[in-house]
Length: 105
Image 1 (cartoon, rainbow, N blue to C red):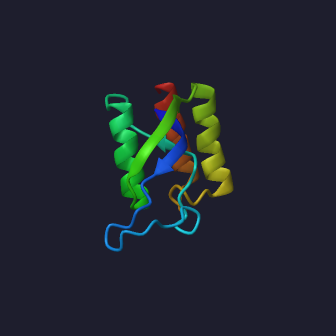
Image 2 (cartoon, helix red, strand yellow):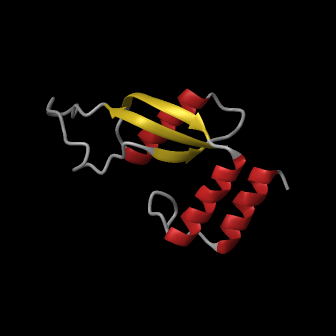
């Protein structure tokens, strides 16, 4: 399922220097759409994926499960816009496979 994550509050204190870094300079988003497995705990999966993808821990965030229609739009947007948040080599077949999984085909 695709989860819309928003109001992300990043832990911006650099562990080595103790200084706070700038979220924009580090390229940290305020919101993002993430794909997680249906059987995972949403909050744990989101926190882990954000940390893995961006290299910073999060203090807090809000989530919203996207409707099927919105999930399909997100996949199409990823394909047509070449969204770099995702795989820049995302192919038409990848889009078909993801949409098929969303609709249960």
